Image 1 (cartoon, rainbow, N blue to C red):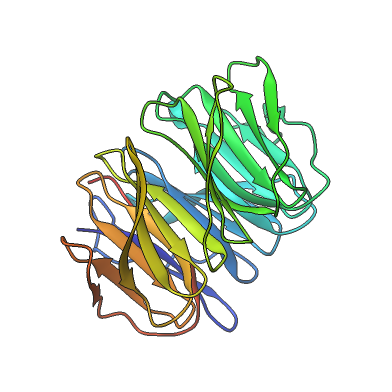
Image 2: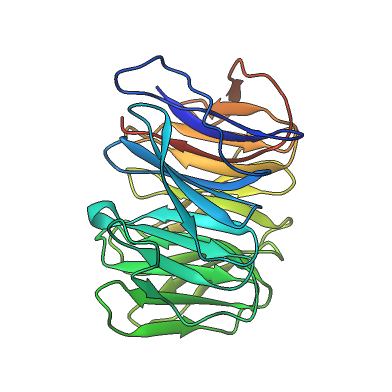
Length: 288
């Protein structure tokens, strides 16, 4: 089990990343400050990081180097996503979302700017759509082939997290007021599940169930058929990020710098032997 984890330090970012042909850990240095977002390509060959320095970096995990630096945002890059065919999506606190293809210095496409910071990006399992949550009280879904952009308003609070259902037919939206909303993209009725603390992160497991993490440390399992929200383990510190492996392992990052794995029964967390050098803001499983 291999994890790429972005760890906030006083002056630099340290990333523990898998390398295909080199040592299992590498220090990927390049950002001019803390890193906020991280994603890995499906093949495990590269990772994308977004920093408070307004840049995103595509890293080669084979040789531990910065393969490409993406400059478009005027504020922190708060969300990143790996797109089909080697593409990259970046979302910033400036409200911009840029879609990058190939090796050019400019994005291949930009979505209409938002009036609030981007808080989360999610690629649909079918690879055709990108969901964008922002602190303007809405989530939009963009067709990556250049088609329509749908906007979902009416949220009672700002969205912190967004994910697609396994069949790409619905959005799961986690709100700052604790609500989890299931929004069918076909236009059917929305299911609203209240919660006691802000939703910090969402992640989809291979069986289609969602893992929900909250700012008070609570971790929950959300099933969609039938809809049910089940309490799981509780992290001692506020949860900052989730990651799920292709095999269903769940990694949990927390504000106290800890990284843990959720037990198979979901009732406990097993801490990984990592140095607690500061809050862990993002993590991702790479490849397998």
